[in-house]
Length: 344
Image (cartoon, rainbow, N blue to C red; front, side, top):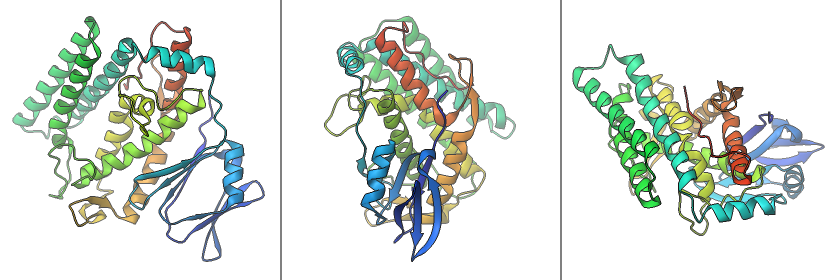
């Protein structure tokens, strides 16, 4: 089993990063504020105006540590990688499979809808006593509709356009009742549907931020096994888009990101004051709130679950890497189909 390495997040304005022996050293106004051995790191994610020395960039590249540059609000800016050890035979198989991706796309969508349904079912089990009859009926109806979609997709051969349409319909059903899962006293935490570029409310701001982090992990996972992160199956190819990373994250979003959003809000770790609205309507996390989210994200990734296909316990942070490896095995012909990851 691959070891779960650490990710360093740096967001203190004016902080500087440099190499000190075989360590990453973080300093602020000449004072050391953090140190991490390079061999324990998988990536360094930097928010905004942080200085990073050329020597550290070189060391990260040689150690296979990815450096990701985001702006102050978490929007992707750039990525620094060392030599990519892509397997040419695996990538040829990936490119060939992308021409007829229906079987792989079916697995991605089944995994995603199953995990969306699991999130709603978990909420029904945990909070049934406090839900009013209308909320119970709405959730139960959506759970049943998602089950019908799963059954139909599983039993029929569908073309790519049809499956993409059903995936979109399932997402609308799921997010259509997502507001029922929110139990914060703050009126600002009301969810009326997804809004992106920019997010227009706190829930969307949290979802978008966590999806950015998950995309990074899925891209790193794809590259770690030799896959091309730009060539996907469910998501159409587009210049600059990591389509395969977006594919891999689909089945993981409900569990790794959406449930974390609900936990942070329902446990009142985040309140309305932790968000700010900019000119133009963009809703963004404050710096302190972002630290809270990043800490919770790292803790979430340490939790272990039994992988339904491998039948082994694995940290949630390793699931993207395991799924990328299983996809690579399928593309090589070692597995008859790509096995989705199901949360239980």
